Amino acid sequence: MIGLGIEGTAHSIAVGVVKKEGRKCKVLSNLIKIYRPEQGGIHPREAANHHANNVADLIKESVEKSEVSFEDIDLVSFSQGPGLGPCLRTAATAARALSLSLERPLMGVNHCVAHIEIGRGTLDNCKDPILLYTSGANTQVIGFAEGKYRVFGETLDIGIGNCLDKFGRAVDLEFPCGPKIEKLALNGEKYLNLPYTIKGMDIAFSGLLTAAMQYFKSGEKLEDICYSIQETTFAALTEVTERAMAHTEKKQVLLGGGVAANKRLRGMVKTMAEERDASFFVPAKDLCIDNGAMIAWLGVLMHNSGVRMSVENSFIDQRFRTDMVDVTWRE
Ligand code: AMP
Ligand code: MG
Image 1 (cartoon, helix red, strand yellow):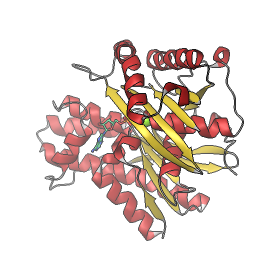
Image 2 (image 1 turned 90 degrees about the horizontal axis):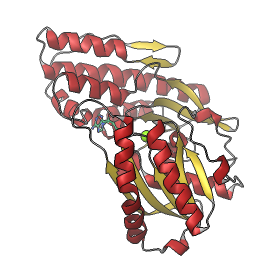
Image 3 (image 1 turned 120 degrees about the vertical axis):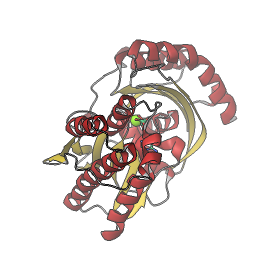
Image 4 (image 1 turned 90 degrees about the vertical axis):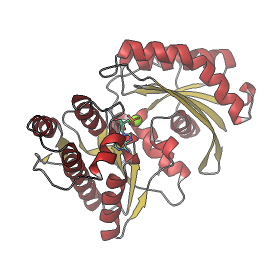
C-alpha cells in the first residue's frame, strides 16, 4: 500500500509518500517547506497563506521524487490536529481535494501519534517505546497502554522549543533559536540556578524563561545562560521520561520533534536509558521534525486496521489530544 501524507500543523507544510513493506515503512519521498516569520513568532494566517502557496507544488514534487505516479497512491492522509486552525485547514483542504480528484480514501491523523509511529515504522527493533516528544509547540511523554497512547507527562505552559525560541528572540538570536542556543551552550562554564518545575509528571517552562531573561538583563554571560537553560530543562524532561519508563516497565525510549536534534538532550536521555538497560532510538532528522511521511504512515496503519473517514467528517481539531485516538492497529 502506498500513502501520501500532508502535514500542516504549524510552521511547516510538508508532503511525504510512503510504502508499507510488511510491518515496516519505506519512505519514498519527504519534502518540506518552512514558513519563517520576518520577526516575532508564527502568525497563523500568514503561515497558512505560505502553506496554501506551496502545497500544490510540494505534492507534485513529492510524487515525482517518490517515482510513483498519482494513480499508484492508495490513500491520502493529513494532519488533523493539534495545531493552528488556519494551517490545519489549509492542509486538510488540499488533502480533501486530492482525495476527491484521485478517488482515493482520505484519513485525518493525530500529529503527535504520527511522531511515535514513524519511529516504530522505520527503526529496527523500536517496538514499544516511551516517546519523549519535544517540538516547538508540543512537549509530551507518551506511551502505549490499554489501547491508547497515554500522555504520562506534558508541559503545563509552553513547549520546550517555544521556550528556547522565546529566550532566543529576547536576546536577538535568529529563528529557530534552538540550534544557536545549543552552540552557545558548548562554551558555557558556569551553571546558573533556574527554576526546575515538575508537578506530578508535568513540566512548566515559563518561570525558567523569565528567570533566564533576568539573568541576561543583569549581565550574565549568554553562553552560561544557554548552558543553564539546557541543563535544567533537559534534565527535567529526562526525569519525567524515566519515571514514565519505570511506571510502565518499558525498555525502550524514542525521541521525536525538532528539539530532538539537540546533542545534549540526546546524550542525557541516552545515558538514562543505558543506566536502566533500555534501548535508545532517534529517527532520521527529516523524520524527527514535522514531516509528511509520518502523516502518510499513520494513515496507512489506520486504514489497514479498518478505520475509515468520509470527507464530510474530516474536520480539523486544533486541540486533538494524543489520548483521544483509539489505537486500532496495535495489539
Ligand atoms: P518542530 O516544532 O518539531 O518542527 O521543532 C521546531 C523546534 O525545534 C524549534 O523550536 C527549534 O528551535 C527547535 N530546535 C531545532 N533544532 C534544535 C537544536 N539543535 N536544539 C534545540 N532545539 C532545536
Ligand atoms: Mg511535531
